[in-house]
Length: 93
Image (cartoon, rainbow, N blue to C red; front, side):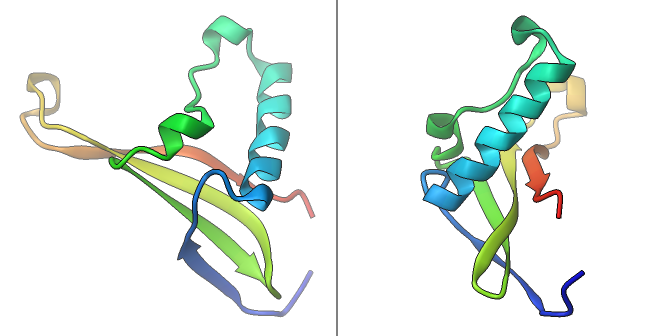
């Protein structure tokens, strides 16, 4: 385990290190769920204005990521806007 500090910062979903992490996550999720049961946001959806993607960076290397999609107020959520956590993953190491 590293004792180096971890920085959290915004990043784009099309960054090569983020793509790699999401690819690993997709492969793992495919072992758990049928494709029609896997409701994940693809790269294009993660680049939308209503999504904020953050990465965890340690020693200059991206080691994890997660996104929040801002959702509008609706009757089934008491007319309050909310956020959905999406695509959260960290390197297994």
